[in-house]
Length: 209
Image 1: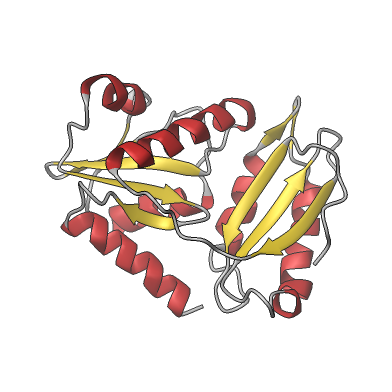
Image 2: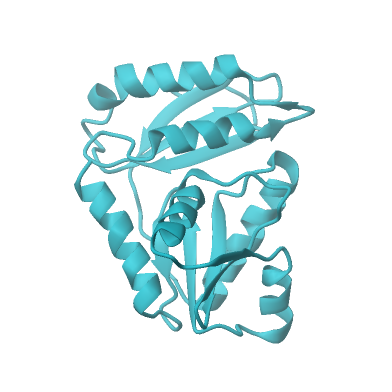
């Protein structure tokens, strides 16, 4: 894979790979094309370049990190570089820790219109997705949204979820993070059956790649 040779990137995507493959390839590429760098969306040419590199060089390039992280950096001029690194699990996964990560991703989405890590909560029979209708779904969150609907679980978008959780506490039965890099991460202090089910489904996807 190519080494980073750019200045400070305006955008960095971090996508989990498994068995030297990119399990959510089409979803990730769709989300890449929905991102904004500077005043313009990521070009179709850049998306095609990323797709070509994933399909032609990922398998050989990931020999040292077959279950690592694929990173794509894009500068303000639309130039891109791709690299691979080792995957490291999150050290802290309390509901508060996951909230902090989601808050950081929200700030990124205010620039790029795609959040790479979203907070999801379970309230009764409802799944609440902490995102804005103005944002496009990341690869991982689009998967969980589709899976929830397949299972007949209603999903509600709530652009005030992060602020509500920060100011009033976690009013939820279950809390989990959905991340392009880490998959589905149930909160260590607020996990439950549905969060664990989504996490297991994601792990199964990785194992079957």
